[in-house]
Length: 287
Image (cartoon, rainbow, N blue to C red; front, side, top):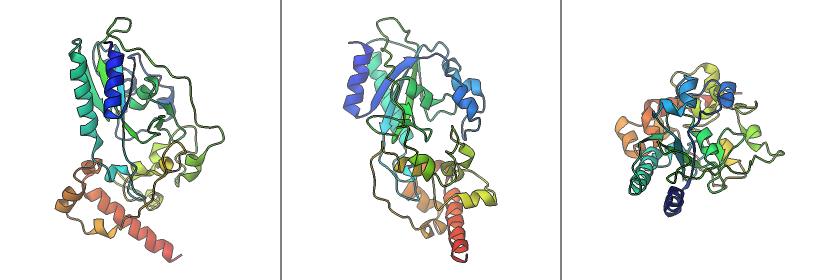
């Protein structure tokens, strides 16, 4: 059984998407156009050269794990189980399955601050770059998390996965719903302006007065550009009472949100956001 058959079977069994690509350097043009990306390496070479993550890397297997949409005001970061362990466990399972056929050197990356995972997902055929800066897949739309398995499997031998370069697909030329719906105009240019992205602002440390106004009622994270995307399923919006967070203790936060990816910022940031939300609400009511 060739590796691509193993991967295809694994993806079907686990209801995920998967592909593979050569470990050649990533084109830095897109990253250069948007130099600021929060919570990742500022070293452009680290983000584009796979050999700096795994010496001798030849090919990269990329998986996409779907997630359910989050609530209004609270994105999927705060409503779903933390995706990091699940994606990593799936890649570990896939690695063990592959190793029963052939031994190889590897490294697993999930939410890596180094390599640009979205570019690798596009190259591996999982989907295309949408106007919201996210990878849009046929199966999950943009609602999926990415994981990468760097290997030293050499292109050309019988162990290698075929490279499924897809027919180029793009957002419909007439569709600009994500751009129009972004409250901070973070998508108004050709590339995402991460410094204006609400998802980033709700996770950022210190905020300026202008940035506080830009939160636009979001308590943590932001799914607005995904919620309006025609490639994603429409969901029922649910509001969250910020008062819950204003009085929340560290222990309460751990119990209620310890299973989510929001845990890494702790209770302090959500409390701050709830305070800003309340302050903005009071200010707007007096205008």
